[in-house]
Length: 523
Ligand code: AMP
Image (cartoon, rainbow, N blue to C red; front, side, top):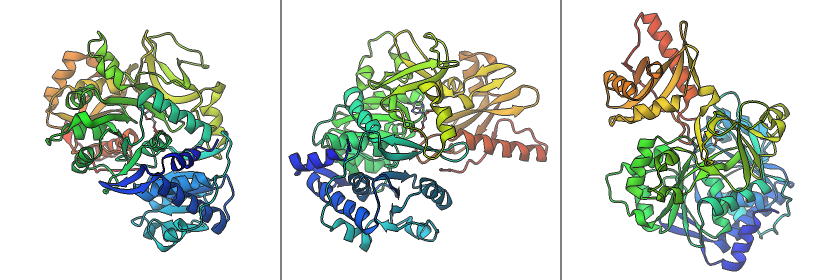
């Protein structure tokens, strides 16, 4: 089934309902959205002579036309390739070439850089330009039939190491993801709002699918992203709103001094990176039990485990805090095990790699048979995440296996050290990495944003964990390097740290407990 059918059905049955809003203003009903998407679908098929299965890239900041473009692509039976808008033009070019995209939509801010590249496209359509207007005014095309196995979305992973890989997400994968979201995480009713403050090329774009299925309102902030005061205004304007946010966004909202009418928020769905307990508690105090957590990855989009708002409500439970620290329980459409080797499940309490099998797991990586075989070995998706289940089926994630620190032969999990450091009230953000060391193999280094001294942090560590886990160096920075999706980039941090260590060696200084400038970076 082609899930763009959900849009056709919405237009037919409740075409009057609002589908898209730009900030506080209404822009398109379901009837408008279906008509404009179907019109553009005709343009893609007839003007650009694209055939079902051909790829069409989108490189744009969040914009109301983004949703129309996505549905036009699917309506025409094509494959969408949403690209992170903050990538460098040469990185965008790499994805366009690798995906063999034939056409591309872009926002006007990116058009000058992209039109200067030789991308071999049949068309580069900029939102709002004359060609875009022409396409939306064509005679609507009929919906193209697709099977569940056909690819709908090539999801290029963040690529923190090496080139990004394109996870092939099929129509069946995304139908399963959407229905499981409505069942496990966030029952949605017609007219409920979803505010797209996170990039549509990633989680927020994926979550627009269950919302279109249920005829919700897709609200695209005018800033095209996350801005605290705009979010507060949108939360006042749109009732029963939900939004997908990275942990850093949740923290910034929770710390906003302004009044927030929390009761009208339906849910705050967060994921993509761990949230430290101190931040979770702050957010729960501020918003009440409206927090739901998703653990997923591009290869099993938004769907591995979840911690629903019901769990947040159950404060009386003796292990409530432990549960809030976990990534929740296995989703309805997948099986999840923790394994050490050969896909053999480990008992509860033991740490291993998280493996996933089921309806949302990708068909493989686009044009990368070797990486597909490795990732899907033994019929399970190997996530590269380390975790353990408790006796009641709650999964606690530790770190990516490549982020594990081995110092003097002992395993040190950065997340555990970060949790302890975050308990100091002056610490705003922290990331712990391993620095190569001739004596210890690696030493623990903490990058800290906030107001604290190394001595204070040392004493917090000594109170709460084994001495050997205590950072040997603290580097104070204004902020941590993060991706466009709000993930702290540990690989970038390690690179910066290596550069810093070299500079310090050259200057003959030791570098301990020092301040450094960490430029905001995004990939
Ligand atoms: P991406 O494919 O870019 O969505 O990144 C997926 C990765 O983000 C996962 O493999 C995890 O390492 C991390 N991640 C996603 N959700 C969570 C979560 N709720 N808690 C901790 N880490 C997460």
